[in-house]
Image (tube, rainbow, N blue to C red; front, top):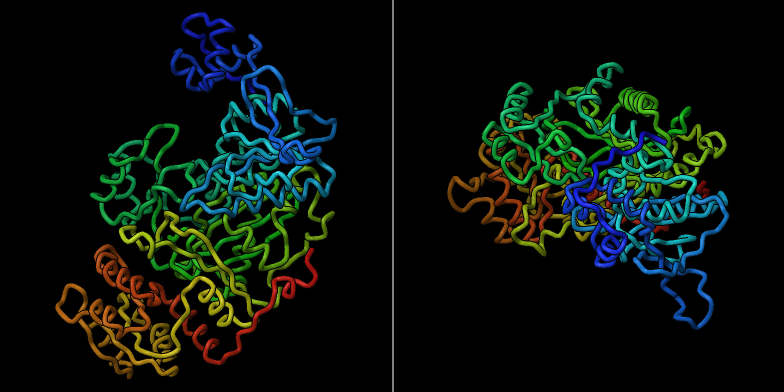
Length: 607
């Protein structure tokens, strides 16, 4: 399958003895190619021609007490091979690799559900992963586990040995996704969306052209290969802009830039700008609502697993943002628009399996921000909220089943009777020097979920689970930007007053409240004098903080308030939607209506 990789001859002849010794010492094909001024594919072919191939050793999980039915394997350059290949149809799943803060475990959930689905279909499930702290590397889960790095060389070695029917790369996030084209070039069958479809979604210029052809609105964008390119693109698009490298996981190295100097600084630091990895520049839709869609396509029909509304502002990574299913601040007409766009994109990219699409809505216009034709971080949340196991369904679709076969073709997430809220857990109290404000780069270290028949109860449960229980009385500090001085803010503040909270506000917000009949105590901003809002927070005189920034200057001022709130465990909200959600949660807590029920009780008839 695919065209054969091009080979560049090794500079000097290499004997089988030298090559074997190098491999025994742990040199990878890529390292040897660098030393010998050749290419990885050339070294691989030379190695195969000379018969220098790894064997696979078995780790006996029963310590030789009795026969182990659940061993796992690793490669080494010795003589005896201990991994025995069966005659069954095999499918290999590539896991997510090592995890770190800002790279969640949600992909592991998808890998494990993929394994379960393959076994249900009578297919032997092989797992390749190298993180010992994940369920996917539990040798009891899979039929056969290879504890190996997720590199092209190691994956191809296993493929040569096992000869699988195909490989699933779309469950492990960006790490295995990068192997799609190289694996295809070496004749490996990629199950699910083709590498061409993946590349079309990742290539911003090609993807932008596709959106224009489909008539789907999107923020203005550009790509940059140099500092000058980036500045020209940003000034053409208009500030603020979101800048990021392509092909990244967890939103790493993404930033919001408000001026040309910020763009120049970004481009000069720690970003590898090259024709292979350009920097993407998008218009940042400040003060917009954001939505996520997780769906499965079988090539004909599209299952919309759910439309999630982000409670935080647009621009915050979906792994960090609080989300709610079903969405509560969008019209039925706009939900239909989102669904239509999702179906169009799934078909245009020839998706087979999972697809995640991020939308933003500003001034009642729905924009597409990004499309990932793979598993996303929100798949576990959507699956648990709706009872529809998306990763399982996707795995079965990849090996030939249809949504109609599986009985989920006509599922509508809006028929779910309860409300589900995802809340992220952050490590800020443990890392006092870490940047605390949420943005496009993921910072959370976990997530929790609250379920209730009512929205307020779901929010309250999620906040309690995340260790952020909301106060039921006290003083509210509020400072909102000019565009947020509207009827929504007035309703939120009146709700807090109705619940017995007294109000403290900065000068502009206090004037706005007073003009609309709401009394408040005025307090200085951080740079205006003392005592200021940070002093009140530190003195325990504030129980809730609402501070909605807009623009670069207000975000700097927000930093001091935010740190004080975190250090004193005070709820700190930066959007009106989060503030409105908190009101509903406080009402639910005060009514003492929260009940504990298991997920199984909510999902009495899971598919």
